[in-house]
Length: 226
Image (cartoon, rainbow, N blue to C red; front, side, top):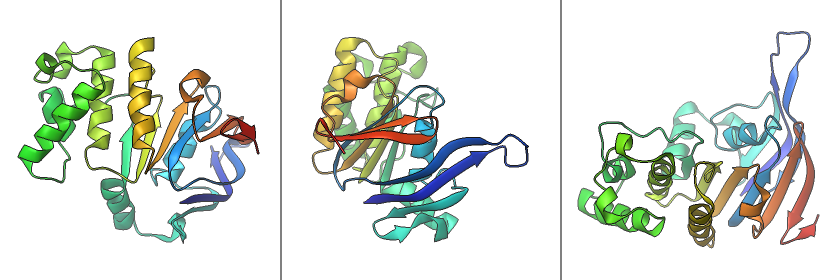
C-alpha cells in the first residue's frame, strides 16, 4: 500500500546546519496489519507519519500509495484521502470542549446520526469507557479517557489506514493493552501504524520499524529481522 523511495525530509533548509528528520528512507509497508514505528524522541517517527498521511511534504524522494505518488496529487485529493481513507490519533486528543464524549466521537462521521451514535457507543465501551461517561465533556474526563475518545473518533469511518501517534501515552498499563488489543483487531483487514517509544505495546506487531536519527536502523517482521 505504501512505499517510500529515497524519502528525505529536511528542516531549516535556509540555515547552514540543516536538520534531517528523514534520511533517504526506502521501505515498503504491508497492505494490512499492525506496523510499529519505534525510536527515541526526535528520531523522526512522527515526521514519518505526517509524510505518509500527506500532512507534510517531502524535501525529496517519493511516497507511493496504492501505486500512485502522493507528491503529484492536488491538495483537494490529499484532503479527500485524509477524510475518507485515513484516520488519525495524535499525541494530543484535540477534542471539542463543549461536546460530550459521544458527540466528539461522531463529529466527523459519514454515516447517519443514529447509526453513528450506536457505533460510537460500542467503540467507546470496547476501549474502556463506562456508559455513564459517554455524556461527559472533555473537562470531566481524564487524559486517558480523552485519548480513548480520540481513538474511537479515528475509527468511526472505518479508514483503510489508521495513524496512531503514541496512542497509549496517557493510559495506565491495563488500559494501554486494552486499546492495543482493539488496534490489533482493527489491523486484521486494515493497515494500522503505531508510532511509539514503548516497545512492549507493539511486541506482537506484524512489522516493526526502528528509526534512529532520521534513518531506518532495523526492520522486523513477526520477530524476524529483515
